[in-house]
Image 1 (tube, rainbow, N blue to C red):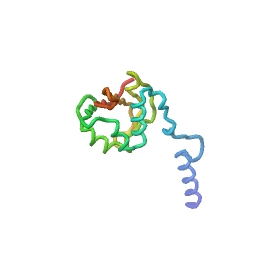
Image 2: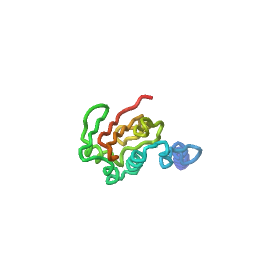
Image 3: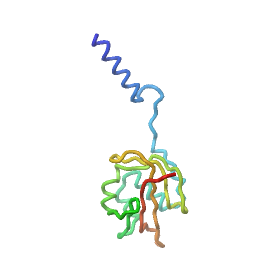
Amino acid sequence: MLTYILPIFLLASLQACGQIGNHQHKNIGQMEYRKISNQTVRAAITAWQKGDAALWLSFFTPDVELLDDGKPRDFKRFSKEALGHERFTTIDKVEYDGTAVYGRFHSDTWGDFKTYFKLHLNSAGKVYKLEIGQARY
C-alpha cells in the first residue's frame, strides 16, 4: 500500500509547486526599466536589481543621506545588507521626472510589499539623498 501512496504524494507535491501544470512565477528579469525616464536613476535601479554593489555605490555622493520611512539610516550598512537580498518585482509607477520609483518589492527578511525609492540628484548627477519606505497607492 505504501508503494502506491508515495508516488501519488510526490506527483501531487510537484503539481502544487508549479512544476507541472500552468502555475508560473513572476519573472523579474523582464522588468520595465524604460518606465524610469531619468537615466541615472534607471542605471542605479538596474544596479540595485542585479545586486552590483560597486556600480550601485558609484551613483551616490560620499555623504549620501538615507531616510527609511522618514528616519535616518546608515546608507552603506543598508546597501551592504540589502543588495542581493532585496529587489523590485514590479515597477508600477514613476514620478518626479523619473526620480521616484514605486513598485512591488521582495525582501528575503521582510517579505513582499509595495515600496518607493526616491533619489535626489545634485547638479553633478550624483544622488545626495535616498528616501525609501513602504508605499500606499
